[in-house]
Length: 323
Image 1 (cartoon, rainbow, N blue to C red):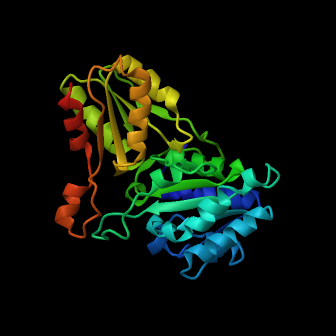
Image 2: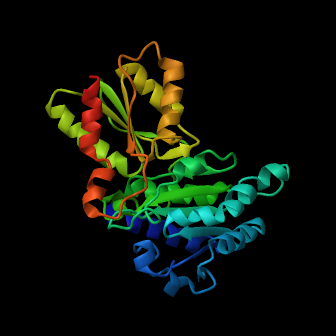
């Protein structure tokens, strides 16, 4: 086993899937450009050609309709949105069509479509290029939503998503692209709908999503030095949600902090808090704390960005608030 980056893990998974199954292809804006997709498709156009690596015009609704139509014929498209903000323009295809197709046709026709939405924030990209929209897609029946936080999971979850046979929204974060970890060279799978305990602890549970898993792990290390033992859970999937791993941990620690990369109002963090409180409210020793984006659009100023995006210090503060 060797160490590769998160971006290289996505690239390797895509390449291996395309080599093994000629029905798999890539389609999306800028999918041949490292500037757009952060090296996650490097070398694929040269290896597989323009029929299997399709760089589309700027038409999110149109390219999504093409990808869905291909999926309905039995092909296995990976549809790429270099900035998931513009998935708004494809809501009709993704939510009205892809999410409902199997149900409306009595399970006789699947839509094996993987939709890669990239969270492409920071760098003063401002409100229209910085959004994490995972909670919106998790709200929709018929869609599965995964958010890998490590190179290992980035590869394994992409393979599972392509093999699933149903529409899967696969959300990767460009802030994770340079993270390195050990990743097997062979094809392997990470199950959709199963979280992972990244660090065991006994005093508080920190449930984290995507980039916030890294922040939570760093926060837990700092808290350990102060005598606070934090258990860190990487959700990996937010639809379906691994309720069991969360509830078992909170039963033990009696305290919960949730760290999300999106807004709090109407978000997945609020959904998790509701599930835990409704089932364990008698066992909780303190209020559930949520670390998330403030309910304002992303700023363009770098100085404001440093205040806008939460980090390990916000998690530490939340842990100590009611400890």
